[in-house]
Image 1 (tube, rainbow, N blue to C red):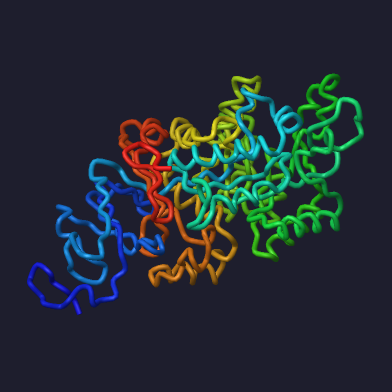
Image 2 (cartoon, helix red, strand yellow):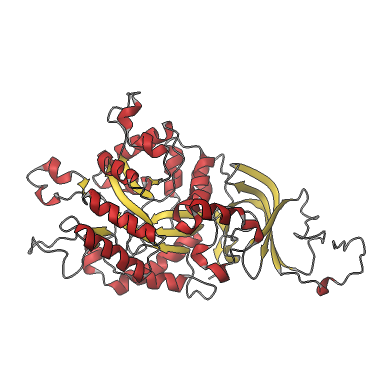
Length: 490
Ligand SMILES: [Zn+2]
């Protein structure tokens, strides 16, 4: 039956099985489905599960009701009301490409981090990065490789996850070590030219041939990886750069097609997605054919002639725009490195991004390759996308719901995934049952987890300011508040 407390119904409210809830009053709320900013919304969050029970329009915020009835806001089930009427509320941001075990190269070069900082130091740094990321409003990240820190990300994930997490941080999807073929990746010894790594440290896991590639994927999945990361092209001949500039700097396909296929197929067999570092057209064309799940960077996809209207020149961009594969352009990293001698790459990254927008690409996710620049400044990627021509509302979608669509496991894809999504309203995806990384996030809707942030900025008038960490006043992950009134609570 419905209760009407104001109307004097004598039913004892305490007798009902009512979950305790938190109410969030949102002055404005971003909906990634319609791209609208909705006014005066009330989000009701189940205190126990952290799931959103409902989101409702409430003209004056005083006539808010229970999901099942008409109890006013001062109902016994409401244990807390969070007043964000003066703020714009959004689903928590998702950064789909970070490296928690790296810090800006402007502080310490990549090579020195790998060869002169111990895994202990790098892990302590990673815990600090995790907190900064969460406080910047990024409630989920995908870490695409520890870069020499082995499988330390798996242990970090344990410390960041579940209701008994040791330290604050985002939902953490990780890939352990990237996979590379022999000779292709660093760090490289100055003394032993023919050896992999320096002092036993390799930036990624080496695998050659179908069998080793399959084994590497299986081993990493066995170690607990959420994702498989492959370096599908790289500056393989970097050692000749001093005498043959072009060849030394050229990014070329690393693995054979057979090797790529076996890695992607093996991962998919276990429900694990594959991210590929890839920049050149040929490699990306092959990866799209093999149904890789995300392409990282891809800065060299556009036609070299920006004046050309010939879309065939933009292959694979054209194919990519109509594929299931997500594109993570990592503008943040190229922008940062443009002042470190990589101006040309940055120019190409902007050119390709604009060409992607012109081709109507919407299968984009926001990942800055954060770590190349400071953790906590993750929103740089969003700002650059807007600065270089993307509609800010679409960028917000890519940074929220698009992020979930990218990082979620294969259990959310295909016909079975569709059914699962259609059943979200039945509140089955309780984190206590499915776990931190298998809950739905990226939208504020019934059945989604309450990963909620709020900014004091004006998204329309000053997008860059509004998404920057300084203006993120409120952060909730899984129904638990981590930042309030601009101050971290932990
Ligand atoms: Zn990266």
